Length: 524
Image 1 (cartoon, one colour):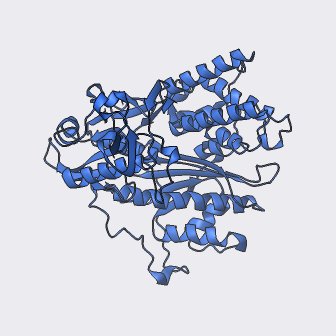
Image 2 (cartoon, helix red, strand yellow):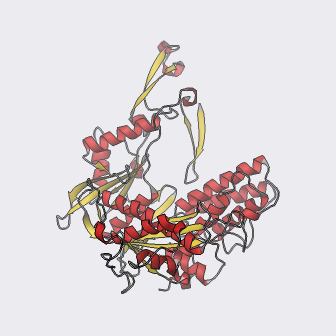
Image 3 (cartoon, one colour):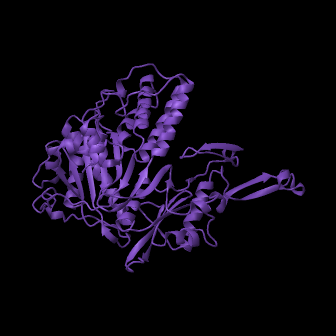
């Protein structure tokens, strides 16, 4: 049958696919692998830090490259030749529409990368591949990387184009789209480019501006067809003081509810592409997919109006080294604490590859909004992680329990951030990147910081015991250190509560995104 699709860059596509919906469901995973956005940001920051070229390409008719594990046939029509009409032809390739086609292609590609090209799959992200090589400039050892997002390839190597043309696209390899090979310009619906920063450092930038503009135009076109329009004023993503959980406006019709779901899906992808400045508001409105109301739809349209006004934004993966201010993160002596006799140290993976290249520092800002939900009184956790000076991950989500104090909600937020940091340190090491220092975590609750990083502190609230000991044990192992930062300087505030239009909001936005804030916020 024929299916129609709208790609991430808003281009239309149609293709013939097999009737996979008429076959039994496979018992194992049936999807092709995709590299995580976080891994892409890490790799681009690493490439800029070490001045390693980046090259991209698309695999042509990707699934058809792989043999199928399914048993299917087609009844031949006249397009197979008059002699074959009515005969049964066995399908031997992984056709689009087959329930296991994605998996078959993924496994075939993995075997090719490992057995033929000698790349190793990272344990931290199975779609990040690397192998040791030598730099052209000084013959020093380094890792070449290949990042695979289904049929989209990013190669980070001194020989990036040669790897694409002669190895991946060479004899016995895959057919690559000829015009797709070269420095990346479009990737996953965003625009990539190399930029030179004020300090002379080269970096990669990723802009979702084109996708955002197309999405906003499509919303305007649909609203015009039903006699509506986007809000005229939208200096912030949502209206001032709006709380979706107490909205009692009329429920949406089934048709408009489906449209609401579609808009939320687009906004969540825009957040994935880098628009961290709407992460909180999209998260809040995503909580009402089961019963969306007219007020919720109005606020979603308000976000699109904000994006239309501020569509020109980009993440810049600045690899410039960040140095912790003197006195912020002193190493504590835990020998005389309850952990002193346990000899706690950070456990390094036994199978991690040899780290190569320069050390990279992790910096985290964490915050919570205590009892912010006016119905359930649950708090919200927000944090953002920088690798050197590159934003690589942000998070905004309601906590799963109701905390009776600010101290409790802030400690839960600190624990959630530390849990993610532990996984991120594992990923970095399993990619062969050098992580010689603890992660540096800033928070704005002095009680939590005193109880997490001070060896002499004692637990005052038993309800926070798990978070208390988890965070403290990480400090003992020197996986992370914590320090205080004023709430007016804590970027994580952007992910816990809607901030009004003004200096605080735009200062935080300017620390994450380029070009979108007013010019004066980029003067430094």
